[in-house]
Length: 115
Length: 113
Image 1 (cartoon, rainbow over the protein chains, first blue to last red):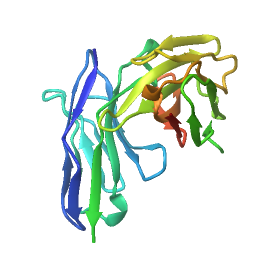
Image 2: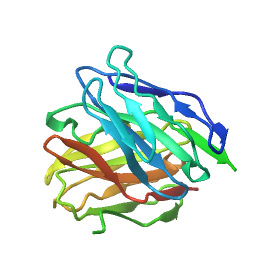
Image 3: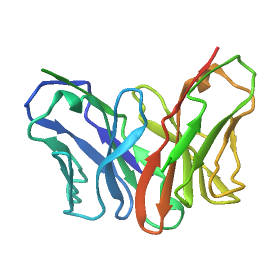
Image 4: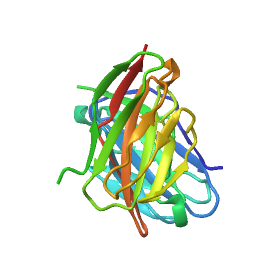
């Protein structure tokens, strides 16, 4: 079956530090890959996505590249802000048929950014 | 545009009680899902629907029932609540047809005592 593994958390950084959150996956075929973000007390919001190998998703200064050879989709940001403090989830969705919207999630990584 | 609306936001149940978590979307999405979120485990799929009248089980379906009589609504029923069902529940919808982005509701925090 499909699975997603994220790096252990929590992650604590100072403002303007570089962020990397590792994500690797196991899936058959060519899944779509996502990063979702959950701010305190809220639901999940799509941060970025990539739908095929070598695609780079980007949004709000965050980036992730779909690496099929290493089955990875690591999230990066060059300079984090206090407002980036949240829980980040890596997820995948298989393609076609009844798979749309059936997401497999990693366990989530709590990010705290201090001023 | 309301998106995905879940009610209630918070609920406390006694063991053995029943309740229904409501979920509605106004985006005319075909696909709707229910997830539960537990610490250290991410979100896990409970039940899933690919359209009105069609539902399927996800990873953790035991203790939950669903039905989908309209495109807009996808309620989740707990027939006899257990403490193991204490969790945060999220409903999501997806357009489908190649667009795989899921839109989530604000969540329902359920405590079973």
